[in-house]
Length: 161
Image (cartoon, rainbow, N blue to C red):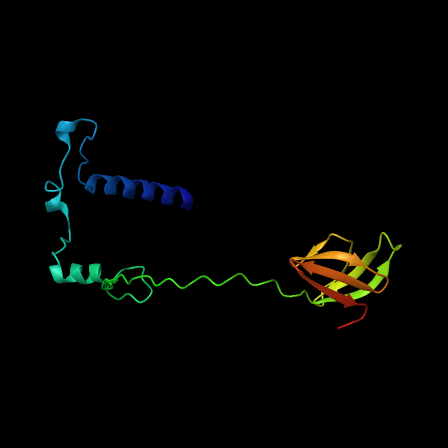
């Protein structure tokens, strides 16, 4: 019984609220559309216009900038062209001798392979004709190896440092 009374009371209240609202314009017809000036009298709290200073402060302080400080354009720096002074090109220097350590030699006299470590790196096996840092392996002996670059030759003995 209480539930039925609540439903009836809510229905009367809804009908009463519906009758108190202003009539809505028929938006399906363009001639009956109302403008904002037509509805001005129905606005319960008209906003007063804020001074331009208020909006200027908002525009000067960017909303999403971390410091919210006015953006200041950096002055342009004038670049003065200077005459380019060309230095004479130095003669190309020869590649320095590689820091190799000969760890071992394997094979016969004609087909030797050498185990070398380059500047503390992992050891690798090389054969005659291999190029290391610009130097070419020209000969591999039983406990030595020769490197050649242009007219210079160096010899690396086994376990020599």
